[in-house]
Image (tube, rainbow over all chains, first blue to last red; front, side):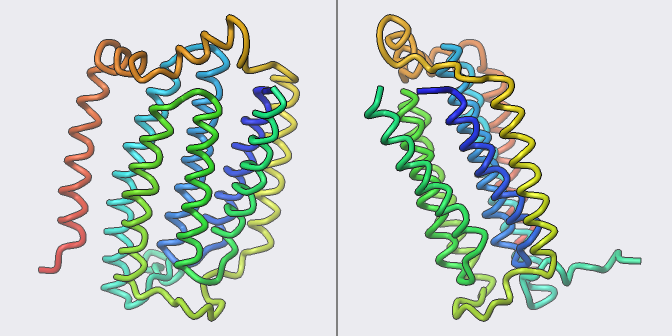
Length: 99
Length: 171
């Protein structure tokens, strides 16, 4: 297997995630797109770990997975708070600081 | 050699289509279920790269826990499930341009930098790849070289847990 096929797949998934973060309005869906991007990074880390025979890459991937889980917990709590205050999960309505 | 490549391309196509489903679906629950396909595909890719422990952690944490959290979030925010087309904002085209531009730049850079370097899967080098992914190797590394980050991550998880409760609490 060529290393690049994994790296390019990860790059494509990352860019789909970027599109999701920019184009979605619903807070939960934005968080899902962030998860897509984190997953793409994990594929990169594991691919390099297999290519370089260095298991440290897999340890980094494990740390990323753990921190992604923490991020989803806090992120969903924030979205829930936005929903409770504005009665809508739309992030476009969070514009209190807008000039 | 060939069998792994066939599996890779089937998985890659499924993952990209499901990822597009995540960002394009007009039904929030369908988006979460498409995300399951992407996560499972990533776990299969890890197995293809001989990273067995990461693959099963991916299945347990992402498919088991994170997706359930997302479904709870969808239920608690009463997201529209009927598909009334209100999930995207009006910067769809600029976002698509940014995504395609980034994909082009990244892909050309990667192809320029790594060319056709191979991940060894057969012979002596292949055996080394397999040994890298063993759970014992990972455990050795986590509890020897990376034990301080490991403990810091556990504190971080505790802080995130308490923080999430404090933020979402009704008082």
